[in-house]
Amino acid sequence: MNKIAVYPGSFDPITNGHLDLIDRGRRLFDHVIVAVVRNPSKEALFSAEERVALIREVYRDTDSVSVDAFDGLLVHYCQRMGAHAIVRGLRAVSDFEYEFQMALMNRRLSSSQLETVFMMPNEMYTYVSSGLVKEIFALGGKVDGLVPDPVLTALHQRLRRS
Ligand code: PNS
Image (cartoon, rainbow, N blue to C red; front, side, top):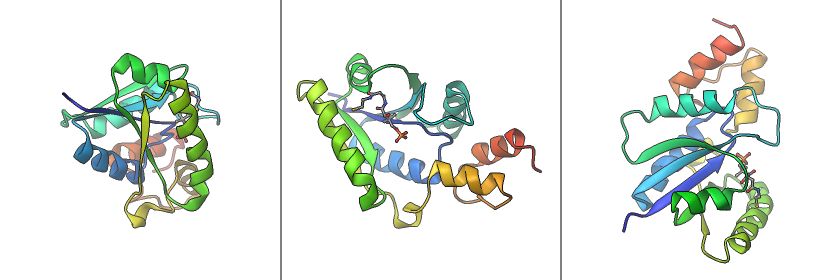
């Protein structure tokens, strides 16, 4: 049986830390669906379609990764996709409380059918977040090496810097 994992998130924009997690997920699962939430709780720089397109560009030659956008409850989306697990990253202890709460709530909502698998990114990405990347770039700092090339190009276009 093909084991499918859903890796959900805002991905506004996707960072190299997220890519590291996806690569780890690919070693555990046959297929990883990167699922971009349509209405992130925070105001987004890129639309869901733009975020999906950027991630698809990164994985255009990788059959074991697909990219999609979803609305509504994550557990409903996972059930529709036939997923066996949710993948999430833990960068630091500060991530834990929110992740722990979501994992247990998702387990309850799915009547214990969906487990969340936590993975730690390479330590070089523990301080990388989409929020910091956007702030640093907007204020003139360099984010090379923190995001994939398509995202770097999109940031330059969106924030009109060459
Ligand atoms: O990258 P983020 O913003 O930390 O991702 C949060 C995300 C998208 C995983 C979470 O907000 C989510 O699952 N949203 C979908 C709505 C939902 O299912 N809410 C109940 C979660 S217990």
